[in-house]
Image 1: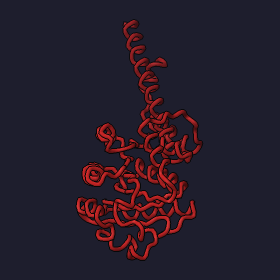
Image 2: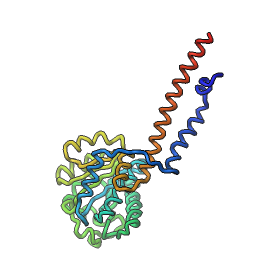
Image 3: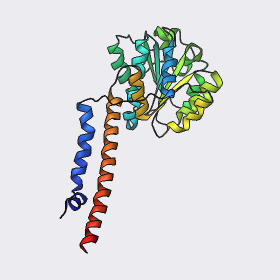
Image 4: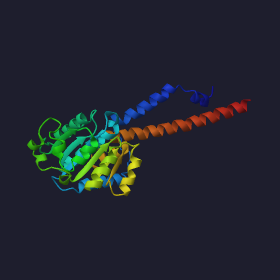
Length: 277
């Protein structure tokens, strides 16, 4: 059997092992592969960067646990940026399954790193059913929709919420989502209350929302893990998304190499067989 025939008949388990090692390697040994920042990610970063000190940003956790690989890094990178700039943060979610707990876990983790105080620097509103009524109602009164926060404390007892009554008191809305709720934020909150906003969404969703960018109804957009990695680079906190993109890039190169090698082996073996006949 020639070398090309051996390559063509290699046990596929070796290929799986090579892919697994290529995924794991950049996680254990971080690489510094070049990464371009898209204008959409830069616009979102610049919009947050231009906000004044101590203003209020609403950060949404509109995603399920199944999409955390792409969305959680966006939430963390956004909180790095917001807390570093001393911006007050109000979080909420339209996802009943896991949304409130993910918002609580991520904000507490980041607040501890930046020494932020709950109720003063950030508040977690949690979840309320009927997202259309929630998004519309907060334009009149947040307390009318959320009488208490995620932990049962009345909003009137929280110093931050004493000055945040409705969208008028919120400077920017940063949506992190894995579903079509972004359409509702645009059609209800941006269109009716003229509130500036940007979004971090899964890669499969991102193409749909470029029309909102062109219509100036959205200031910036992060698409999937690539968008999350771009924002991590912008806030100078490379982490999960950057490692994930390094793994993804190496796996793509490996697969291209296997495809080329497989085709060369196939044609070489066929030519050798034809010559011998």
